[in-house]
Length: 436
Image (cartoon, rainbow, N blue to C red; front, side, top):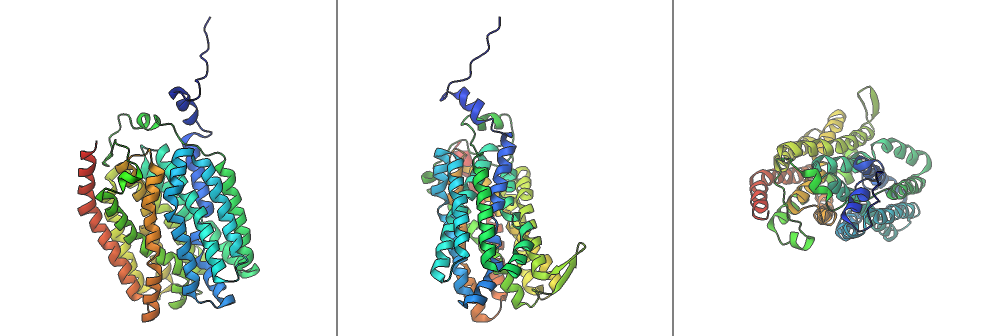
């Protein structure tokens, strides 16, 4: 008589493979949960521009002072991700994501009652910590579950953050108009935070042996390290700092557009002019915000998928050149409502892919054992880039024009593109070859 094998004991390799690698829904289920969480925190960044003018109309604090809250949000969202990532790599994604979802809800609830700048800044910091915990966890988890398709997985996950606010742009704008920005902050903050916390309960990480099984016999165009680097080891390598500098260059222009799109549209006097496109007629700003969010999300898996096939640096060069050209064209033609809508869409499409290309390149180079912490450390470049936002606004205020801001942002994109192809590509290939 056949004897049925007993379940593996906890702590054994067989137990890890049978339990950790078989979550509900499989690895695609984990990816979907990550995308859902990311879409729930997207409005904290991409919906912010809709609140700037209403807050200023009520309190007259001045837009530069209000936008400091956005900078604080981005700083706390990014610079604490390495710490949050360390907790994820050590204890798993569930607890960190629960924590992050709660803080996101609290932060926006605080925004709804903020009657001073310091309270607005505190709410931004709390929101940023929460968003960073969710963002870093979901991207790192995607890199671990999909070592064979890092670009696509990171891109799909980041797409939730890029496009997650697309469906809510119109409802948020309508609710601000009908019920006030305070009620909008409260309702969307609590709703989004609760969804994140529920999804967090189903998140898990794969076992240590999972990567080797998934990569067995696979040939990739991307240089991939077999050595697993800690964050302390990673920051001692020139490749990391080159990627960091490129990330800053690319993130700065995109963050400027994200935070200031409504003021830009107003200054070019196109914000309320109706635009008809694809059978829809909407005010130019509302149309631009909707299309921008969609394209900013679509670009992440698209370019991630492309980079899995033609290489990370080749894809960076292509995207970064398009970004530079798009920003230049926006500066020239933004006075046309139709051009404003289309060109901001192009700018966001060519910018959003950095959030799939850089994490996947980081995991390729430094391994995925510490992928959440390592990618999180690289992600702090977004926070560094946010420090340029006050400088961009100062240039615009001093000159009374956005042109010099556009020139600066496009120049950085062009430089980053050339660095990707002619410096990073050969440098990273030599580094990986030496450290196999």
